[in-house]
Structures are given as structure tokens and as C-alpha cells.
Length: 227
Image 1 (cartoon, rainbow, N blue to C red):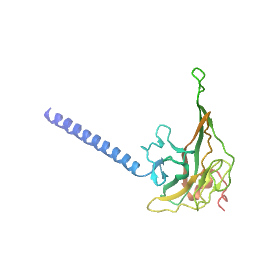
Image 2 (image 1 turned 135 degrees about the vertical axis):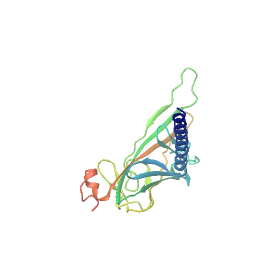
Image 3 (image 1 turned 135 degrees about the horizontal axis):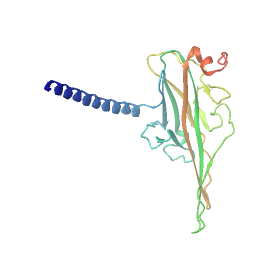
Image 4 (image 1 turned 45 degrees about the vertical axis):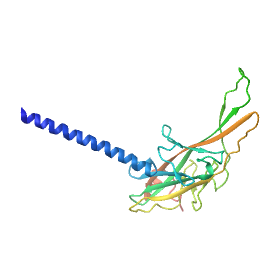
């Protein structure tokens, strides 16, 4: 009986030790995530999103990252703000285990907020929240957006709204960094005696990475797409 109790105690202590190691490892993992980018893809290819405002990185604990919604918050109207759109830079980091290709979509929501001033008691007007849409501004801009592509990034487009890099991500022992967005144009808001407007952009990025020689099969696009 004593031998069985010793075994039970040993097993229990082992479980506690392993449990504590798990906690430490999980904490270390999130510390690494904060020091680096925001992981947006896991699996065969690891992808991280690096977002900066005037050189300051946005982490999962940043006031400009909504962890519940998984979106970055961009001030699109006030040039004095720390998350101003003209100071925005977006990078993708891809860890290629084999030669690969990637495509992405920036899932964006531009929101105009209008507040009515000098209201009389009992006749208040609630703030108005309005989605903002754009015409396609040309090849220097992300489609239907005021975000601008980074210099040297020459994307290809498809009918489903995906953006493609014309170059293959070559197999390497470390991650490859791509600068995709460099700033954007502010949205013209109005402020007068009657109203005060503000505008914000909320975005995240959807990325797909495939083995380079399987892009046509997996993405169901023509094999001559990159030619």
C-alpha cells in the first residue's frame, strides 16, 4: 500500500511540474508574440502581421489593436494622433518551409462618426455612424481604399479581391519580410458650429500561402496567372 501511495505522490508531483512548465511556456509564447508581430496564420506556413505607426509597433496589447474583434484601429482624420493613417506601415512576415506563393486581402471598415453640437435639452440628436466607401483610386492604392501600396511592391489582382505578389517566396531558414502598405490619405471630415466629424479605419488581413507549384490547383486560378 505504501508503494502505491508513493507512486501516486510521484505522479501527482510530475503532473504539477508539467502543468507549471506549461504555464511558463504559454507565458513565454505570448511575450514573444508581443515582442514581434501579430500572428495571423498558423499551420504549415507561419505568417505574422507587423503594423507600425511612425515606427512604433502595434502589439496585441496596444491601444490601437482591438483584441476582441482582431482589428487594428487607424485614425483617418487627425494628423496629431499617434495612430494617424499617414504614419501607418504594414508588413507581412512569412516563414517559408518550401518555395511558396502568397495572396492577401485587407478586410477594412471605414467609419465616419458625426456628432451634433449645441443641442437643446429634450431635442438631442444621437451621433450618426456611417460606413464610408471609395472609388478605385488607381494602381498606387489598395482597391477601393485610401491606403497606399509600399514603394517597390507591384501587386497583381484577381476578380475576387485578392492581392498577389508576382515573386515567389523562396525557401529560407528564416522569415521573409514584405512591406505592403505605406500610409494612406486622410479622410476629409467636417467641423463647424453644428457638427463635429471623426473617421476611423478598422482592418485586419487575411493571408493564404501555398506551395509555389500548387497555386493553380489550390487557388483554382489559371496556371498562366503570373506570366
